[in-house]
Image 1 (spheres, rainbow over the protein chains, first blue to last red):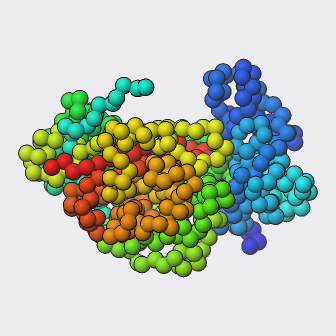
Image 2 (spheres, rainbow over the protein chains, first blue to last red):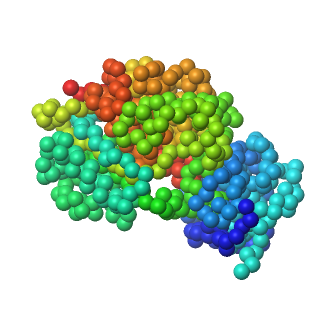
Length: 155
Length: 390
């Protein structure tokens, strides 16, 4: 379906996510890393979930991990996605530790598969994660739907 | 080893109430709470002044919590609890109320879960369900928990050999159970073929894997057993319970829940074996969770769920009766009350007062709770084992 409205992806985030968006704007995928016990965590929070230290530093990630599961959405509450269904997302276990939910290209691999997660700024100006197969690094550049998601909104 | 927990045998659970479910309603949550309380009083014969404890669960009462509801309802209570735990709130409300009555902090606790359902109310719940879902799930487009449970289901099917036909069998059996349950919103017979051909919602989830959000209320009273007997109220007693939160946090994706950690103690507290359970009420927000609960409660081993499904009927008149009302998948999910439906129906089944089909000679019921998909998994798991009190 051709998008017709000016709907944007959901833009609501808590303040703790701001550094992730700042990094994504510079093309970097950064997560909180505990300076006390080295735990890498996601989603962002106010303390290390292991040792409760508040010494958390946003640190560059390789994004490598395993795609554990994927789903093709045929329903959404959000006009942006409703106009673009079906939409594919997946769950990735990063080698660094945490599990993330990420957008996938339409031509996503079947799980389990090695993928690389990268962070981007979406049309609402917020960080989103995208996972592509390690052996198909062009999958993001070739996916018009994802390119639109992370393009600057022309208004 | 922990010291053995106290039992609950001097406390009764009575007067299971369901305020009929409706798909959409102009009424607020408070309307359903009031109807539930009125029904508890009417069916028990108690005066409102006899209720000195109030336990409440809802997603849609905001900005009001349980205390605010006491003023709405004119309740003067000396014990109040608000259980914001969704599909786990029924088991937890039961546990809290049992101890309140047992300790003497309250003598009659009205336990009520109610939710309204209006256009857009479900969307507004899921948009800001939690900080994590707002920051790391909802932006990816899924309509509430459907996306996360689709991922869990996808993983489960790939790794544990459960097929769509297996999930379908549970959904079809529950629909069969719902056909006689007067409050079920979905009572039209469902065939496996219809299940498999239904439109995809979030692959591999199809339409009939997903509950229908609706409005309604579930409620019961907790009081001393002697009082229930003196009043001539059919009632159950609770033989054992458990709750566990944020278990197996290091699992990369959810394929098990906290039941595993506490099931041995649950059955030991109840003094029962698995084959003495006559019916099981799972929290069936999606069929994959029913399979996980069957496994993790110990009715079969991990990974044996598919074989277990193929060897039972799950109907009220067959082997291993499951979700005897039809469950949320057929009755509907009235918000937090969805986590209470199995309990009210189990109380009825055990006291021989089923509204739908009665499981013959039902003596012991296990009611399982599950809830709170805060990020990528449901954090709360719990269970209670009920038996006849009189």
